[in-house]
Image (cartoon, rainbow, N blue to C red; front, top):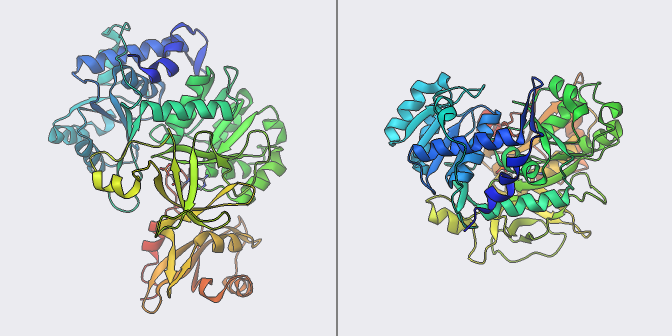
Length: 503
Ligand code: AMP
């Protein structure tokens, strides 16, 4: 039996002498050097006693070596478990214990607390630093690169990715070889990736976007990537002339638009910009096109499902929508209470089914049963709507739905009204505990750079735009919305900040 993910993504690198990775310092890693690194690392994993199906937890900075750990895991049949580098040792402890990881790899700077975490969980501990050095790398050069990839079936697990878990404990999404490969194949086709492409890669690789969407697409298409440790405007502007495509979260694009050097001349040669992981404001989409002539291609996915929808490569990329279900993905909108399908044009729960949908939550059969139906449809927790042309739009997360005085309020509808005000850069609508209404609608507003915003003016504006029950009972003005590394607005942080407003 072959190892289909290894065979498709990594085996072809063996004979490739051209660069696979371009690093920020002007260096390159060729395909065959990366292939050899994967094989040496896989030999280390096997020699440390990791067997197919065992979990490898890694909390390491983004580097070619860190990416090779993913390839080595696939080759050795080990389940790859990348962790956000911002997690504290106490947080890492949960993931290591919950997953039963056999080996934890972390940075030397955190060696002491992380080793204690590993010891407590009965796991081994090794280090890998930003420059690839550390105790793992010390073992690797002595290893052979003749590792024989192990056999893996399509449903065998390749990765365990924990959801960001802003409510409750985060859950380990089990992703099979087929989940990852089928999605990469679809995206290569849909977004026309070829061996000629050079992807500017500034996303983290502990998340589905940077690890699977971006890296797998490049591995599979035979292209290369400019592999940056993080997103920095100056670096991106400096290196963009060498790229053909870029994948980003919306904040990448708003930050680039804030820089006058980012213009038509700089981007004229680019083939594609994609956006996802958080909503791209229609305003950003429009401003980006006006500045560069490019229409950002917005797509929608999540840890559990890989990518579900995409705006078309050819055809109309519509601002404020996430496009159509990808080939092979079934998407329906259902009543969140009854689970019955809703007619086109009505907002409801987005459910998806297809080879992209995960295998369930690691050792959480009850959670899995709640969210993954017997017929294979996954209840995403996102509220969306399909318009009469078939475009899907995301209205918001179900958990952000506000119930005020018995009425349902979808934050997005109100945010869109506030965002239209010329002095408003963006807004976030939340529900706050209220003695009479249960929850009260509140709106947090960020003014445009250099503008000041009048709360009274906003209150007047909303009078004839929104039904009374939807009108925010409090408007707060702040400089910046709290966001996580993937650019998602952390509404839980805002709810905590203003929780006592109506008490
Ligand atoms: P994660 O599992 O961290 O990738 O988060 C997935 C969630 O991000 C989805 O369930 C959506 O709520 C949100 N998301 C991803 N892409 C988009 C998008 N293009 N527009 C709006 N929300 C998105």
